[in-house]
Length: 98
Image (spheres, rainbow, N blue to C red):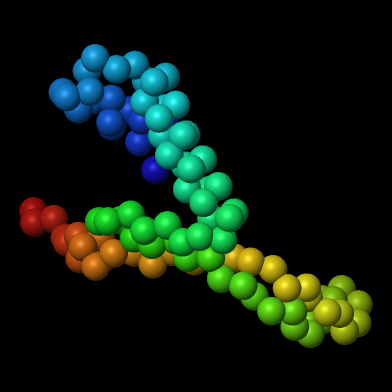
């Protein structure tokens, strides 16, 4: 599912009929921007019913250049992990009855 698909689904709900796709898209972008800036500050983001975005520090470690085979040191960096909530995992496992 793409961003536009999400915006269209939100727009198609009767309660949101008074809003434009542009407005809903802007709100969606603001939410993502806020999540991103919080993660950049090293803080975790927990969204009830969705999951938790966790910032992890990866220490530097030895590696190897795949092209030359030469040993190199991979520098320390941060990465973001996502742990889905129990309810999201439970809901995603549902199967439709035919």
